[in-house]
Image (cartoon, rainbow, N blue to C red; front, top):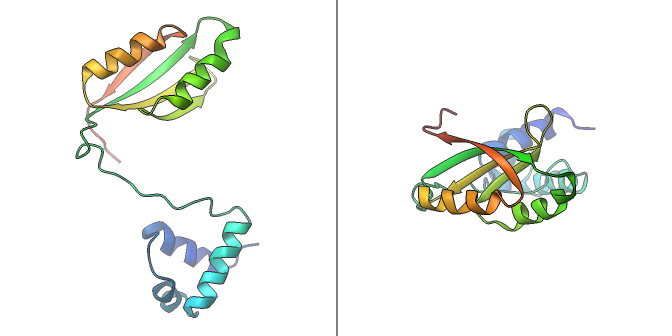
Length: 138
C-alpha cells in the first residue's frame, strides 16, 4: 500500500511531472535515487500510468471545442462507431454513458467547418446533440 512519502511524491509529480527526482527527494527527505525507485514501484503497481503534457489547444489552432451526445441508430453499429471515434484525431475523449444518449464525445477542431464535416460523418452512425463550449472555467 501507499505510505505518506509515496503520497507526497505523487503530489509533487501531479504539480510538475518533470520535477527532477533530486528535487522531489529534498521535499520528501529521500535521495533522488530512492525517489526514482519509489516512482518505478508506483509505475509497476499501475498507480502511475503515464506522464502527460497539456497543450494550449488555441495556440495550435484548435479553437472550437464541442461536447457531443451521441444517440446510436442501431445496436449493430456500435463497433463501427467505436472504430471511427478511435481513429478520428480530433476526438480527444470518448465515453460510453448511461442515461440520455449512448456516448459522450469531446471534440477539438479548428473551425465550425471542421465541426460540420465531423458531424456529417457522425450521422452515418448516429444522431447527436452538440454543445459548443464557449469558455473554460476549470
